[in-house]
Length: 286
Image (cartoon, rainbow, N blue to C red; front, side, top):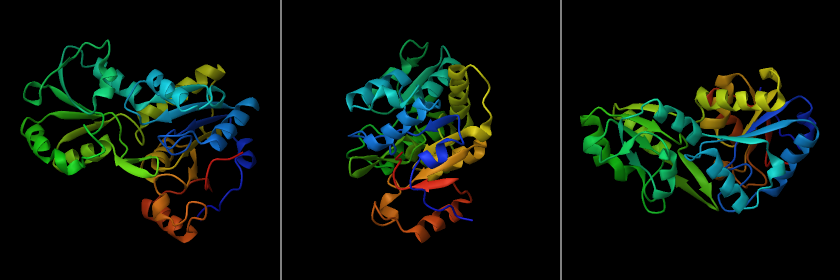
């Protein structure tokens, strides 16, 4: 049965010891912090809960923290950060000494910092790391078709550092690495996804939460919060934890007014995905 809308996070919070919370689309929109969501997480922590931010950002967690500081996301809202970039670095480290071709903007180059790999043109690469589009303000995944053909001819494995297809940037949606990786997979290429909805990032986040609490956590008392059916909802379901779904994120335009989403359209999206969240909120609020 489809979940009903919840009016507050406080009504759910007592059922959980830890929250694995999405970042982009829940606590900020790429430009400004969502202060109500940050306040809700801070209140959860003051009541004894642990919050690990779990993000498909293709940069290490310390880079993500600096970005959050820059848009005034309060540190009181979370205990730690686990990023797709962190998982990506773990995989790259396992390929020490190899040559890598990087698809993505210059700002993501930190993903290779202090790792034993050489960045080279695609013609010389042993594998590919995709962290995004070179210019997500002007390009679409179709711009990469010729490059995808070259990579297929060389049978290169692609490590996708951000499985998101799109994210919000202010009032607009921009393409992410997942859009290119999916296109490469559809062409027959081998793809390894580092972030949500795949298990490695959840395992790393849950381990971090348990270390912070210094005890084992029952997954029945761990809640994922997110705005994406493809990554957050399906990822939580595959990992065996509950999910609180936030509608005022990447699916908002498909659901009508942000403050009054169409419940029947939302139910249809859940039904089509084959998974349903534990609860639904328009925005994360205490």
